[in-house]
Length: 325
Length: 256
Image (cartoon, rainbow over all chains, first blue to last red; front, side, top):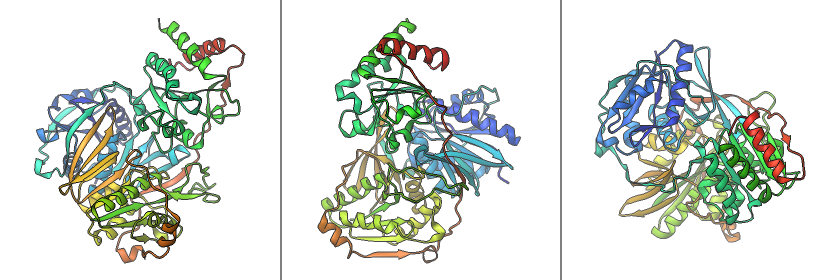
């Protein structure tokens, strides 16, 4: 009988990512309801020392596969290692991050384990001992409640949504041999090119300052960059401004770009096309600055200013500087 | 080269999505159906590969009768033939079952490379390409923005948070395609005429010998929660309005 709430912790360069603590906190909550324990899987090279950190957020046991073959993420090696330990232990629930690598890993695992996966979930519940995973569909135009008939019941959790909660447990290390060698890796990561700009990742940012067609051109974004710098925010863009070549594709927020849920989303010169609203309407607070009072974005905004953004944004920046000084 | 591109028909990005009152699905009335935008990059990349290396592109789709339009669109873009898995038992099925259906078709095609969109913009699962690769027992490279092929291998760029990975994979493999990979072509008028005569095999689940019961079932759909009506900060002076906004964000919302 499948038992236990399991999770895959995501680490990069030997450090756990924040989403891992979000998942641990969510896993603890489910396990407490079920009266089960939380087990985490950590795969990497030189990562054994990460276990106590997971213990702090409610993890009872940490299964660690530590070997040079895991130095860089590869689907083949990581999925083989997780699948092995999961098959041996038969958990009821397996949670992963819906980060870029977590999505790759969790979907491969769903295939390898031949089980159901609810991807990019924003809420998890237990009903009659079963996991109910709530996830946005159609980029948030509606939500689906997913029930999985096979085990483990898999879900990937959208970063930045689940609260991090300390709840000290043992975090005891259980080392395991994944039995994976270099020869098993068919798709190899031959290079990791780090983004030297130090740019904040949209899907992980607490605050996003975003600009649309109203920015009038690539140079218009300078005022958004300045405000974003002060707020430690990421800068986003609408599809119109990406398609116009003003901003890189990686900045696009919307149904065919990134779906984000920051604490604060400041939309400047964005009218609010359906496909854009789909990508940001789960933000906790939305601010709209647009000179068109009829723009649909105002219907989603908690706070709106109808005015020329080129006059308003620099004033907002000045005010933020005042309160931060 | 034997190339496969998988496509899905989805509602257009501007479509208003209404959930049926009983929560069993979405109301399909008035929806304009299009090829999933991420699949367009896959079809385009398949065609470019064929044009560079020779060979044939087969389009495979799982979907109701209307999905044939999307297969014809891909054929009009330049693919040679199609396979349409159409079965009421597979309507709105899950990622695993879709991938199993695709795998059953694709096994027989013996491909060198398979393209899938990185996710479909309807259910947003982003799983089918990976599950397909797992079932076929071949490597995957997901969310790819650049692809090269040489010496029987591929080299792909995969952006992740704060970095990009350069990945080399053996063939055959599954590539899932992301915006930025290429600029998909439009079907030409002669292409559309020719597409009408290109062969498309139609198969059902029984012919493929696959199980149709989904592993992850959407038990209920709901509309998104309503947002409380917001405040428009009134006034004529941009500086005063900006000051009020910052005050509200700090004192009321407590987000800065």
